[in-house]
Amino acid sequence: MKPATVHFRTDAAATPYIRDNADILEYSLRNDAKSNWESSNDCPYRAIGVGGEVTGFRADIVIIDDPIRGRMEADSTISRTHTWDWYCADLLTRLKPEGAMASLAAS
Image 1: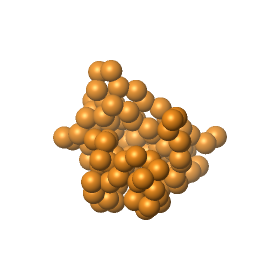
Image 2: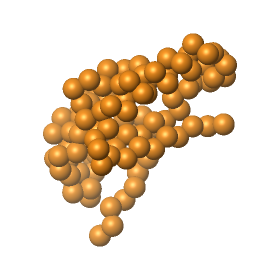
Image 3: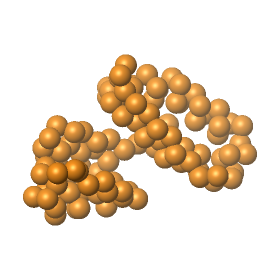
Image 4: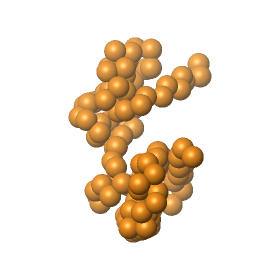
């Protein structure tokens, strides 16, 4: 059986779905702490915003979704520099050597 792909706007929407459909998904939540949970099949999940704390965590997969929020941030050299510095110095160093990264952004 091929696993289903489900997309949620927020992690707050994902945890109730996983909890309510554990028998179909064939895994459950070990905990459902907001933005930092782990499934029974040993898949941890951590959600953070740009500039958030990533020290102490390693990632197999990093998904960056809209790192620049809106026109004001896009036009701000300071904001773009802050985001880029955080990406290079913090986030990128957390990706495991064989890890993957995807970046999504609206135009």
